[in-house]
Length: 164
Image 1 (cartoon, rainbow, N blue to C red):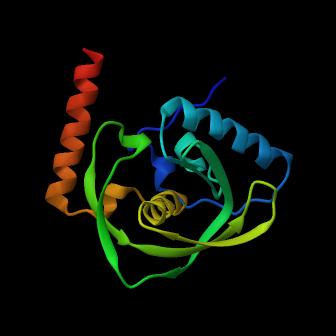
Image 2 (image 1 turned 90 degrees about the horizontal axis):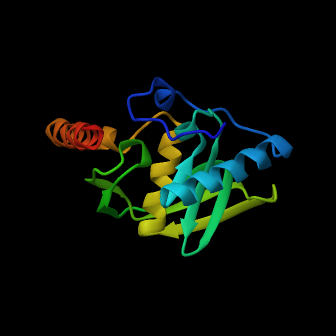
């Protein structure tokens, strides 16, 4: 049975994910997540979005998909930027979210090797967005109350029209 991306109101998305070991089960989950990310045409996917409370994220850059196991942001730049963000859990709606322009991330890569990298701009935003999922946060938690109401109204309006 193929997993689906959970809708934003699913309580699993509000729980903190656990660190994982690099093993066959982890590799299998990463492969499944790659299929879902490609099918949904997203730029990132976190394991909690498909119901797995595991600290695994995928990020699509150009035509490649990279996986990060147990990612941690170890350093944030001083400058912040505002970008339009969306989410596969809130398909079809966007909001301006303020994030750090630069971050340093440590994780295990898809081969289970320790890596450290610096991301800037859109890539830094994607890392922050996906790592938020691992901590039970959604992008709508980072916007004001009125803006959140607008985004959720749009989401339900689109969902309602799609099912009519």
